[in-house]
Length: 537
Image 1 (cartoon, one colour):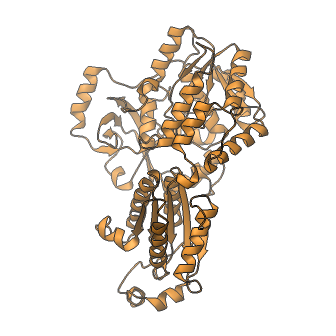
Image 2 (cartoon, one colour; image 1 turned 30 degrees about the vertical axis):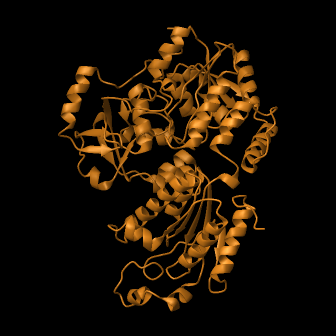
């Protein structure tokens, strides 16, 4: 073998042979099914293809605890990030150790069977502290762990039936085994992993080329793509940019492969984890920012892993130039050829037009009776008068009647209602329209999820209608506050259910002192200042 050995000594793909896979499909008909989340699909794909070698499936509790505490499996093998299957409490009740589960893609395809060996309820605060070094929910990893991860973990080995199907850039999708075979075919032995989640420009290409030459290595360009929704134009643009960049390296010196590794903002731990995954793909060398915590941690374990760390200097000038290029694109200005390649800029410009041509969402939140709907309708009228984009109003009552009529008012159902609004608004924004949303949306966590969903497609402007409770209650046009005070309505926001005021809203408007016309005018000026609207003549 010419390539560096896989982690643990041998690549461990988990896909069954065709005859066994057929038997597993038959068995799955009688088994409880778990529909995987998007993140879990990525984990299963990498487990089945061997990229997570030496793992045989999702971690059991003993492995999980030692990974969190010591960055090692129970066997002592280095592994820094826990990979367990998180499920709901109601589903976990069906899964005593020994249970066989069918793991299915969200679209229903059977990907694997799992034999449950462990079931436990983790201390997610402890996990956050050990993995991310904080329990602050402002940290994206902590926020995901607390608000987007199910409360019960399952562990156990997998038998793969088929990998997830990809409909985009299929020629750039490789399992660890296929990539190793490709590198062997090319006769490459020294392979430098180049991982990125942002488009590469001239400085990054030149830096990578110098690092490869100094290491006498070939290059495996292996970008991480956070969002792989087929409707995500930015995803397609980034891949096209990588394809263009690949042509800038000397002939027969670089390969491109898309890595479906889920984002993990765990700092140096995550860098070590990515190094292990790339080793499984056949890389012998990894890049790390000179002087960084990531470089120090990967270098500390380099001998154990059999990897060579190649440092690079991350200059402030390059970062500043990248920020300036993004700003130029947002404002519709030219980006100098000295910074990047014309084809890269053209791809980015098509996917992310200037703000004046992007879609946006204006998202109101506030108590019942605060004036959200009145301001929203006034704003919609003014946007329609301007005529620069199609405009859609997603008022709380209208959405409840037409989209969420089956939902109640528990926290779970309220969150689901807001997530539905966010999804519709994201589609409108993605297609360069304007969405104006006016729900109560009392909880910060779900508002943050909506912001994250929409902001990747265009603008997101949160408006906190901060009208005091006593004013809202005096208005009480629907008589809801009176019913809540009388105990006829339970869980009413502001009375016996909390309203969590925004901490990062773009604007706060108190309608006890501002008219709807004045409020809409303030919002329009904000949109103009942000570049989404042309100033009124």
